[in-house]
Length: 84
Image (tube, rainbow, N blue to C red; front, side, top):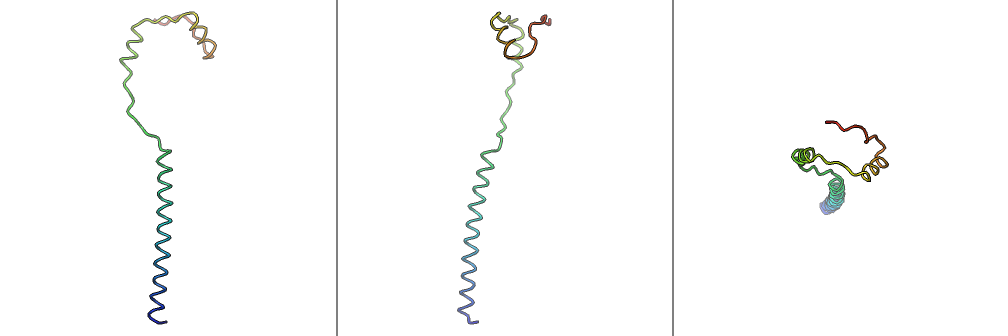
């Protein structure tokens, strides 16, 4: 084979490799975008201890309508004696 033929074959192989690399890069970018869009973002959990403490200290008494609503929607017994 002549020198020109070898250069031509090398050029075509190089062009083919560049096209394959380009397609692989596009596919990788799409895959990374997909994975990023479905990755759970973990945030800091707020400290609710003070809020819970203030609710406990308020001695909240639900109205009869609220008790009735809770009974219908929760499916659990909520009308038992209050724990003190």
